[in-house]
Image 1 (cartoon, rainbow, N blue to C red):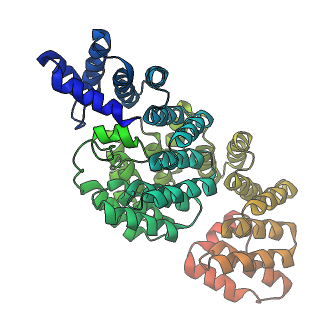
Image 2: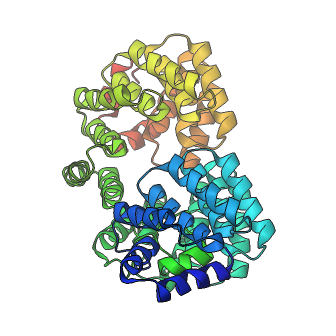
Image 3: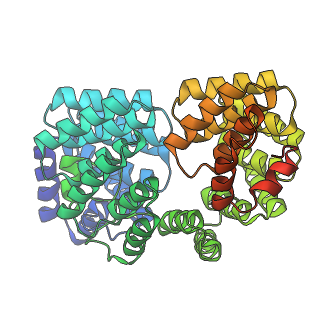
Length: 469
C-alpha cells in the first residue's frame, strides 16, 4: 500500500469531528485493543459516511478486511480486499492480506498469485516472501519455502518471523538441529515469542530430547505477551505498510502447547502427567481434535486399547478422512488381536493416502502378526521402505515377515540394518536371534538375551505371535 494512503488517513483523523474521530480510531485499531466487531462497525460507518474517497477509502476497506479475517469471515475479507484493490491497484498490503485469506481457505495457488503480484510491485517486500514461503510450505514444497525465507532475511536480517518460519521448514524437512538454530535466532530478537519457544520444543521432541522440549513448552506457557495484538508485527499502522500474518504469530495457542507437552510427557512414559496436559487442552478448546488424538495415543501407550479405540473413533466420527487416526486406531485393534479390523483401518488410510509409509508398514506388520497374506505383507514393507529406506521400524517389520516366510538370511540382513539404525529395536534383536537359532543351535542366544534385557516380556509377546525360540 502506498504510504500516501496512510498519510491521508492520518489527515482525516486530524481534521474530523469528534464522532468521526472515534470511528477512525476504532477502524484503524492501531493498538490492537478494539474488538473486531467494533472495528468492523467503525469502518462500515466511515464507508457509509461518503466523507472519504480514493486511497483513504481503500485503506478503510483493507482495515475492515483484516477484522473480517480475524473473525473467520474469509469471503467478506476477500470482498473488502477486492474493493480496496479496485480503488488502489498497487496496494501491496491488500494483496498480501488477500493472499493470507486464500491460504487460510486452503487455496494456496490463489494465495501465491497474490504474493507474486505483491512482489512484482515491491521486490523488497520481505513480508510477502515470508508469507509466500509459508504457502509453499503448506503445499509440501519445503525447498521453495526455504528459498523465500532466505530472501526475506537478506532483505531484513532482523526479521524474527522469517527465522521462525524457516525453522519450521527445516523441522518439516527432518533437520531439527538446523531448525533449532533458526528458533534460537528468532528468540534472540524476540525473547518473549512463545511461538518460537513452542516450535523449538517441537524440534527437541523430534530429537527425542523430551526433557529439553518440556522446558521450552513450560516457558511458552508462562511468557508474557508482547505489547499489542499477539499476531501483529509492530503496531497495526505499521502492519498496513509491512503486511500481516508472516505465517506464525508471536504467541502460540496454549491448548496447542499443552497438547505437545502432553505428547512429550507421554513419549517419556509419564502418562499421568501427559493426560493432565491433554485434559487441560481439551477444557480450553473442546473442539481441538489433535488433543483428543494424542489422548487416545496416551491410552494406547498405557495399554488401555478399548479407551484408545473409543477416542480415535470419536475423532473419526467428526472427521473421517484422517489417515493418521485410522492408523492409530488400527494399531489399537492390532494390539487386541483384532488383526482383520486393524487391516480394514490401514486399508482405508491407504485409500485416502496411497503413499502413506506408516500405513503401509502397519499393514505389513498386522499381516505378519496374523500370519496371513505374507506375500502382500512383504509388498507393503517393500513399498514403505522404498519411501523411507533407512527406517528402523520398517526394516524391523520386514525382518519378521522374512522370518515367517522362512527366508532366514534376508531376515537377519534386515534385522542387522534395523539394529544399526536403532540399537533399541528389541523386536529386531529377537527376530535375528530366532533366525540365527534356526540356522544353528544357540547361535542367536546372545541376541535373544539382549532383546529380553530391553523388554522383559519379549518371550511372552513372541509366544503370542505363535513364535518361540
